[in-house]
Length: 219
Image (cartoon, rainbow, N blue to C red; front, side):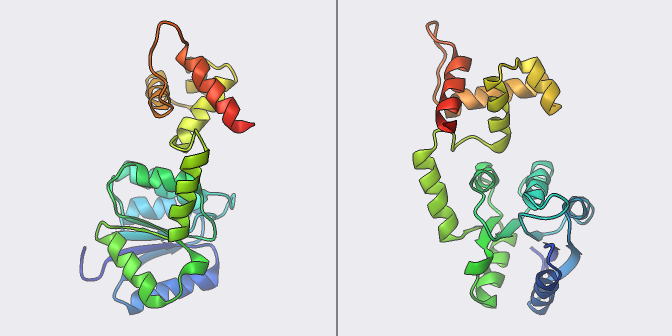
């Protein structure tokens, strides 16, 4: 990490985006981009390759999970890219996926639980340095989710694959629907079986067992 870490801010609310920019600048960060939409975030991440990014979850144009999806995509392209998620909500599936690769440089803070500038700046510096910063409420919800949801360990993409399996789609059909190769679908399917602890057996169909687990968790 450099003396003035190159920093990206992604927040759709102007006052908060501007406030974060001024706060970070005042504490020695070089804010190389401040963006308000998901597409702008994707472009800035690829162009600037920031040393740390502060990213809101819900951003235009869909105001659903644009920011987090962009962050996940950037982490897949640039493993270990430091991302600090700053959100109003705990998005359990995406928090798990952010943590899944185990490389660190990840943070997830809730906006209404950041109580002072020093706490926030310390979190940004820790993520930029390769550490992990998680709000206790995020951790509590992840633990609760793991205890109650048999599908908790699956990534959002694996859930998509499993939901299409439940519709009766073959691997080829899933590949077509999700614009993957069949090989990629096969890898996702193998991961699903492993995470659901469904082992190969002559007496059972793993695909059917996985679908039954999915349907049971969805009722």
